[in-house]
Length: 189
Image (cartoon, one colour):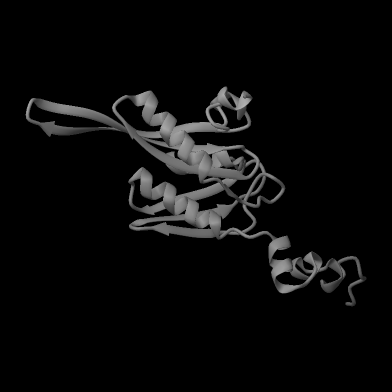
C-alpha cells in the first residue's frame, strides 16, 4: 500500500527536483460581500527543466502559497518541448501573439545573453535558452505576454523536424558545403 504515501500515485513536489519554477506575477483580488471585503490571490508561475521544456500555469486561492502551488501544478501539466540550437538559442526568428499581446523572438550569437522583458525572460530562463533577443509589442499584461511567447515557441521547428516532414535528409535542408563555391579555389585575374 505504498500508494497511500504519495496521495493516489501523484508525484510530490520534492520528487521532481529537475523542474525549476519562477513566480511571474501575483495579484490580490477582492470580493465585496455583506460584511466587508474578502481577499484572494492569483498567481502566475512558469516552470521548466532548463533543457528545452517549459510550461506556465495560474492559480487562485485565499492564501498566496496555495495559489502558487496550484499554479505550479497546472504549469507542470502543460509543459511543451521546444527544440533549441546547440542547447542555447532558437533555430529561427519567431513571432507570437495572443489577444493584444505580440512578441518577436530572434536568434542571437553566443555571448549575447537573454535580452527580454520580465515575463518573457522568465520563460526563456526556465526553457534553458542562453542567447536570445526578444521584444514585446502590444499588451504589457504578463498573462498575455507569456501566452504570446508560448504561442511563438510552439511554432519553433528544428532542421531535423523539417527534414522528417519533407522526407529529406538534414544536410539537404541546411545546404551542403559542396553546394557553395569553393573559397580556396584560385581566383582568375
